[in-house]
Length: 313
Ligand code: CP
Image 1 (cartoon, rainbow, N blue to C red):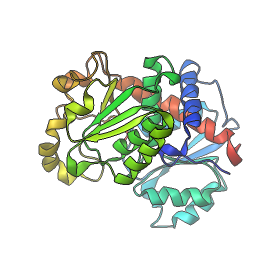
Image 2 (image 1 turned 60 degrees about the vertical axis):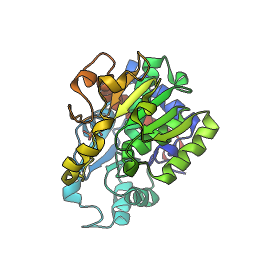
Image 3 (image 1 turned 90 degrees about the horizontal axis):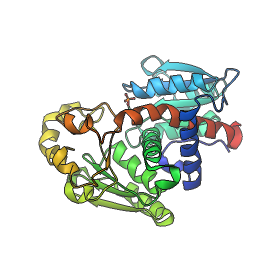
Image 4 (image 1 turned 180 degrees about the vertical axis):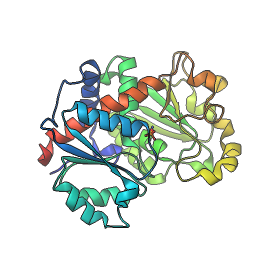
């Protein structure tokens, strides 16, 4: 069966651990594996803006020995000019894998059902699983290895209903983390995601906490994360959201509730003075730049795993 990565729980705890260990290995030796040598092409498609995801996937595919085939979503107009099903059939005949940033989760699921090659979620409205792999690899490096993640506490403050919060829940629970989400009640994570994360955590020894109290979320945490208050497509809600989210700003005062050496994560782009202050993002506890670099290593590890397991090998 072809393996896909559409949401964080598409990797079992053991598979996630293998990918994270390989990500750390890729950081030490950027050419430790070259599963795309030939070169074989990987289609990388964006229906939404990007910097990190585009750079890290295209660079990573080239470093894996492959050819990054960048497809402009505005030109392809997948689902409008041509159905997702027909696009999947065409791409799957020519490329080794498909990486897609789009809107609905159902769209990427449909792509995976007919492509016949691995499909990777490069962000949808519901999940951003590649970012969480990079975040977990960053934490693993700082904590001393992928095996050190289990039992640590990761707090996320801000918009609990967005794709990052959902992916922290699923991916964090898979890693055995105690995941805490601190968000306003009207921006709580989707109940089905909380339910699934709780189910995974029961197997991995992690746990899931959702609270409206940002201090409670951050108390004693080993790592604290946040994300923009205005996800792509929500720009018209900016002023209203600032009033709601300001108590959840990741600033020096809030960070003092975490462990003294807690790591600070931000997936970027960051808006200093909004969801995070400059003092915290640019301060000594921030690992945001390591995290941005780990997009490259983690996605190379993920593609290697998908391409060397299941029918794609
Ligand atoms: N963090 C992230 O996905 O960055 P881009 O939106 O720039 O790709």
